[in-house]
Length: 306
Image 1 (cartoon, one colour):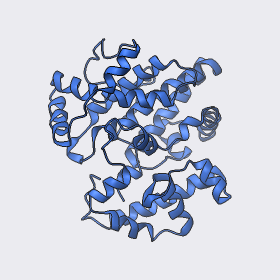
Image 2 (cartoon, rainbow, N blue to C red):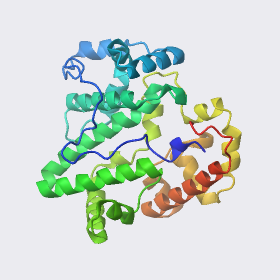
Image 3 (cartoon, helix red, strand yellow):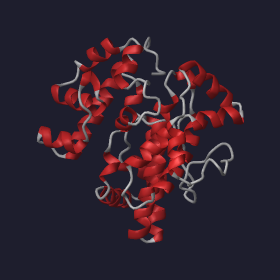
């Protein structure tokens, strides 16, 4: 089972004083412009996405700080940023600001993107765009609802969670976070509980990352998760690996990631369907992911870049 199903793209623990991801190169002022006149939307709608080989070459040049390559990569995917930003409209942040945050996320994705892994840039960038937009919305809601010192502490804990997720490939426990930060366990649990309460007001944070990849892909010919598996030649093996899970685990994994033609569903939808709590569904998903990761580790011939 590809690691992409278990973890998010690599990230680092952010400084508490800066909530936005660091971007390797200076951000052009015109690229971050929030002038979203109708002509702007019309222009980005006509952007032509490069083919797979051209995109890989542009990405390689971009890593060598070629400004023209970076700009072309970003301009070809502006429609992706706008499409994702529009999904988050009506959550207390103006659309122009959401698009600006999404652009910053896309630039960070370009800094981290490795074309040798075989994925299209739009597939990889979607997670970073969403992360930046969601952080923007969450920070806005915290600013209104929480004292400054609580906001800062919550950001520290959530950044630690992201850091542990990126390095372990699993959702960390409160004990993991407490150990990393040297905080009392009960304090970490209270802060995480507060965060869950905040997130419950914004159900957008439980949308599966693959949903936006399939729904708002800038390059509409780019494959979704199932297509990527088929192209990589491991689709049959994935089916065989899934057959080793129990019925509930397999059902949850298939519907969380849209495997085997199953419709992608949220934790809440699966909980209602299975008669379980949302938390129990999440736990079963993690258990199944651990089982599949163990199977993958026993198959060294599988290309881990997928």
